[in-house]
Length: 170
Image (tube, rainbow, N blue to C red; front, side, top):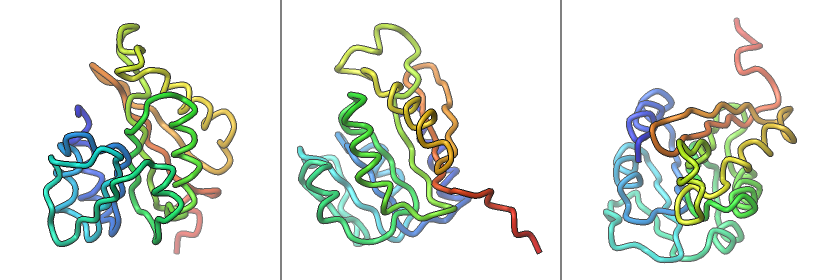
């Protein structure tokens, strides 16, 4: 995943307690981040031979919909990279954003800026970019969003907040 260095930098900067990844696949991104946080949760219905099981790692071998029903706790960084179909990305966003920490919590959507028409095929980025646009258009008062292009798939970074973070400076 082309944004692993960005994700590592965000973790170094924000020092999150809880990282949740929806759609872990082979575990490359998850295994990069899990040693850097106190709690790392992997969610995938086809789990997960590639995940490195550390003491802080929790594995939820189920769909993201099932996981949202039983998840407990607050999320500092949520990485959504499961089904790339717009409606499923939005469902994951809505189901899990309720757990994301207000003000400082981040939601990352992968595959939201495909670099070519070929990458909009269902087995690649599909139409996940439409979910990012939908969030921006319909929820801009509750979420700040920026989409970072790349040579392949792109990443949208969303901060859950209804106010400017630094408005109450001393």
